[in-house]
Figure 1 (cartoon, rainbow, N blue to C red):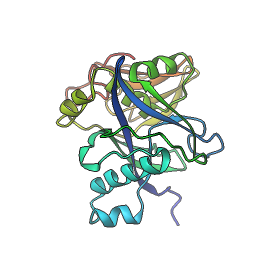
Figure 2 (cartoon, one colour; figure 1 turned 30 degrees about the horizontal axis):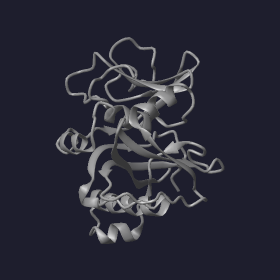
Figure 3 (cartoon, rainbow, N blue to C red; figure 1 turned 90 degrees about the vertical axis):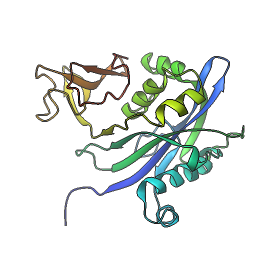
Length: 240
């Protein structure tokens, strides 16, 4: 038998709404006792199941939309429509992890204001937060999120309304990300394709930088001097 962990297909949906202060999203806090991302704040989502794939005639991307809608209803009582979702990115868990997922990340508007109802099992809390506020709290060490969540929030921070997100992201390039996680100068670094140290897993190598680095408890993204064929995960490519 192979020691390589199975890569399970999964999906996540970033639920969005307009507010007086700008674009808001719904974040859920996972049960601290969970083996994967326990205690972290996440977007609704989970693994695809056989029924999702059957409903999509084994089209994984379509099944991912169906699964994202199902998980949003199960985890927080919200009802995004699969046909309204726009694909933001696709992430595969690093090869060194014991639990690996192939995750489609979508954004979706909510057609109606539904009461947020969390399950109390996997999900223990929820917050509607301004996208920029969520990032500010993360950088202050007050909001624990994983790098894909940080990158996604950073990507959305340049938009003011849900309509802007839907219009601009519908035709935007979709990054496919396989991070390499390592340590450098006593901190954790997630290297992305295009970084000088990506292939050798050596963040000290000189050259282009495409990475997220843990600084004072928060993940910060950097895309600098990369080749033209590298799609920045955050459109501005700035340090965030």
